[in-house]
Length: 489
Image (cartoon, rainbow, N blue to C red; front, side, top):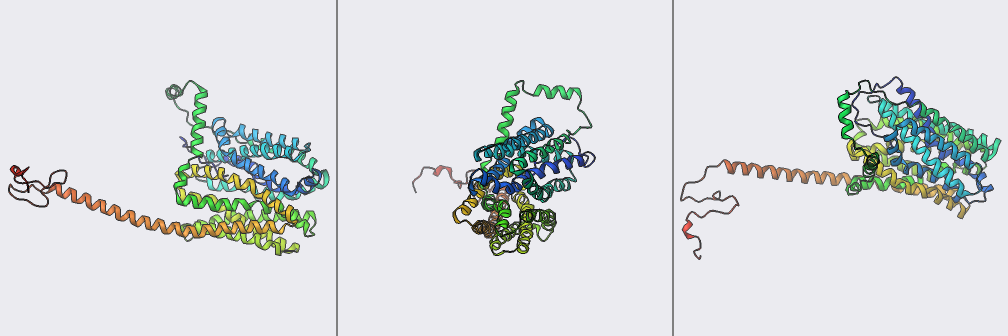
């Protein structure tokens, strides 16, 4: 989910002070939001054994959680806009804690879908949107730095929580681990409590408040309904599908999302199947998270250079091809040392893609259309995100081998990267061609306007003279002998 755009403020943010405490709270909330669905995969093997479920069925837990987190974006935006970031972030923390604690006593996979997938996923959505919105209230000039520090919570928490979850699993089993994890996620409430509302230094006058109150409708239900309708229109603007560049970006992006998360969810189980001990397998996720942590800001610096900036769409497609190729090579890596190399390459390519994924959309749509475009993109991403991990788990159930999972994900992502690369060449060629055509049309219009101005400035000819310019207002040549009107030729 992308950072929420800042509202039009009538004050200047301080770009510091308590804002850095808010960034710390957002770091915690975003860390749980993006890492929980990945590190839950450590519990999958034991859940699968005790609940007698297939690999595909267990994979639905994380995929439903991710889909709920993305699909809940518009709803959380409405709630944050109406009630503020602090109560919504705290509500999200309570939802996550209660859902994890409730899931620990579940005896069916469907129950885990509801608790962990739907309820916890929605709670994480509340945490994520509230965190990103409050940062935009506290920062203006330093907003990129503040957002970068907050978003760093994802790889940091992934690096820490992977071995912690393995320790909890060995000590308390998956049920006790979910209960403790729910308690840890109550820290999202603490993080939300740090997100105090921005205090506006200059209060409006009483007359201005009175005028504003008179302008507001009396029916609060009508106001809420209109606000909801406006947000729905904002996030579901289907006119974007008429934009060629947006459609190309969306197709490639959905192919990437389909195969992006499955390798993370099954990497620990894959390493164990190759004879690696469970703790060392869990550290592969930590290695990936650490590499991702440093690659994202580095990629941002490279993409912002004057040489890469005009070609950022090509860099994005190359990063996708790099990511897909890494998965295709994974089945060849048998030893733990080679799996570490895979985790490093995976972290590099994954970080590159996610450092560019929304920047490329902004490059295509512009600042004004970006919020609506990203709302539509995140909703569309729910479908491949929902079916990707279960489809990968189904391959494991059919063939009894994780190799086919990585081959499928690598092939789909590489196809998406190649599609983006080729279609971006076509798109830029067509834009250049259309630009030249529009330029010629504009020049023709300018010439016609100049001719019309010169025609108006030319004096009328004397009686008895006829010329090409001797026309009436409709462009029909005038007859100098009006008595001939009606005379046959």
